[in-house]
Length: 317
Image (cartoon, helix red, strand yellow):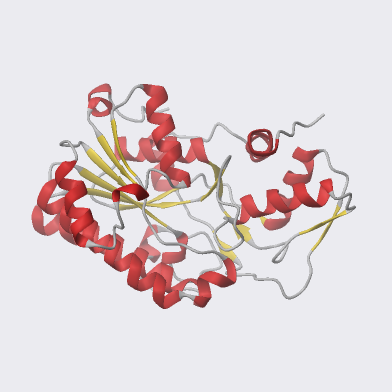
C-alpha cells in the first residue's frame, strides 16, 4: 500500500479547522498518537462566519504545511431541508472567509477541504468526479450542497489565480464513537446504532429503521476515513477527488450489520412516512484507490462493535 505521506510532510504543522467536530477531534487524536504537530481550532476560537475571527485565527497560527478545513454548518434528514437558506448563507460566509485568510496569511499551506456526495447531481449509479455540476442536486440537500460546491470551486479558483495548493475531497458517510446523536445532526449510521440500542434495551423484538431498505450509501469508520484522506494528500494536489472505498451498502445491509454486532435477534421494519433522501449516493473512488493502493482496515460490523463498546459499554457475546 502507498504511504500516506512522507515523514517530512508529517513534521509540518497541520491547522485543523473544526477540531472539536466529529471528524476534527478524531484527526486531533490520530495526529497526537502519531506525534505529528497540530494547531487545533475549535468553536472557542470564534464563529468562522465572521471575517475578524477567521483573520485572527490564521494570523495567530504558526506557518503550516497544510490546513484541514472541516468546518460546516450541517443538519440531517428533514431538518436539513427546512433550513436550506440558513445553510447557504452561513456556510458560504465560512468558506469564503477561509479561502481569503488562506490566501493572505497561510499561502504556503495546502488547503484540504472536505466535500460531500450531496454536492453532486441526483444519479442512480456510482458518482465519478466528472459528474460535478452536471445537473440538479436532490431537493433535500440543495442548500448544503450548493455551499459545498462553492467551497470546491473556490478552492480550485483561488489556487489557480494565486498559485496555491489545494485538495477537495468528497467523502463517504463517516461513523464511529462519540458522533453527534441529536436527531437533527446525527449521520444515518450513528442514528441507526443509537435507535437499535435503545429499542433492544427496551425489550423490542423489532428494529425500526427509517427510510427504504434499498437506499444506497457509502460508509467508512472514522479512522479509515482519516487514513484515506492522508493517503489522498500524499498522492494528489490541485484537484477534486472522490475519497471512499468503492464498497457501497444498502440501508438494509447496514441494519442487519447493527443487529449482528449487537447480537440482537430482531426483525427489521421500515415504517412508511419517514424521511428518505436520495435513493442512491455512492462515490466511484477508482482514481483514488488505483493511485494509492489504500484499503479500509475496519469492516462494517467491526466498526459498529467499536462504536457500541465506546459509546454504550456494549460488547457482543
